[in-house]
Image 1 (cartoon, rainbow, N blue to C red):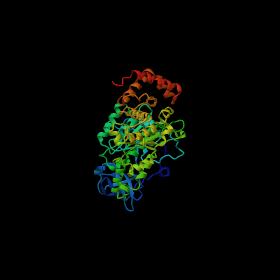
Image 2: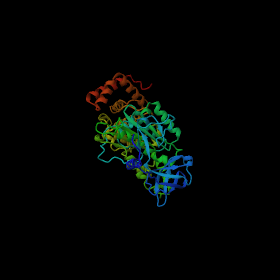
Image 3: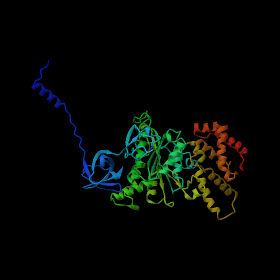
Image 4: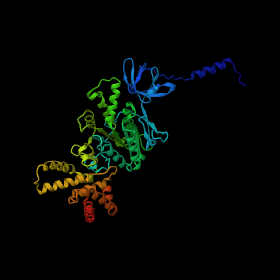
Length: 521
């Protein structure tokens, strides 16, 4: 038996102490000196960083998180991201050394969450695969590649004349009640079979409106690959401010990681994401409210001086990654609401200059029954043309110019009635093509069917039809081709261009259908 002596105890203790490693974690603690309007002023946080996540310990140990915004000489101005009523003067505040992160991953799909990633749809907790910081530096030039893949919205007027590519930022702009959200929802519905993740960020909207969007997506089977981030009108300004960035962070998880959850590379491909910000005007208003409450100096229209940077750093996160980095993409469709069609206001001009084009919706066109009410004259896509399939380029190449000259002619003919035959023919073709572009809500068209519809218009098959029969002719023609000549659609989808044989087959199919079409029915 080993004898226990004072020396052996001493040696054992020395050995234990030598191998002992003690780590002391120090965290700064401050106190709330003033709270109100979703803002807290905190004393004692000398080492707080801009944008750092702060932990407020409220009554009964309740934790509320905040965001350090103003770093002043003797205090920190923070915005609160939770229950403001739980915080009062002299409550404790701690730094965390982190910035705001949101959960991300496959388990978020099909769910409705708030900007902090907490579920608000009553379907139970989310076990997320990872987290992403809400503020993230956009990839540099070398990590990207040019936009070269189409992102079909299923809307004939957009896919033919204002095409959008994967990785593009295309602004949807117009007055209230002109169908901006409907275009974005149509685009999401059209992606349900395209292996694309969709994120819809609702900023400052009524909760009933968001519930309507969820119901529409579920009805059309598009919710299974969609995440909805909702900061409704009843949420605080700080939550509305971070909502778009939280949505972008959730999207970046899929862009920068492959299907197996590991970082994307040449073998492990990144995913394609479509994100809709509805709308950034309300985010700018929330940021203005936050900044004015923090006593930051106001600029034009009382917005803070960095409101341009707010939107530019958000929209720069839309990306088409290079093949070495997985080739994932994030396509952004920001929405801006104008007042009485004024696109020269501060926020609209900012976002127009940041994005790669805009779809402008006109109130007048909307009330004339032209829906979607896209004004093709001032709508433009700066990079999407290179992503359009060749078949669409072949049929829609001159459509934009033809419609512009038709509108010009239409304006002139109001003053005179003596028109030569060429002018009369141009007006007839223009009015029928304009009618052809009308499309109902939540009824996206596959690209091959869009090509057939425009081809029928270009070849003059619609010219002698009554205007009110054009949309019905299009619907019945496409149904007839799907049923009796599906090989035409298959060829366009496979070859992505129109050969002489395909054009001949299309002409024959359209002519045969037209003979049996009753325009007066």
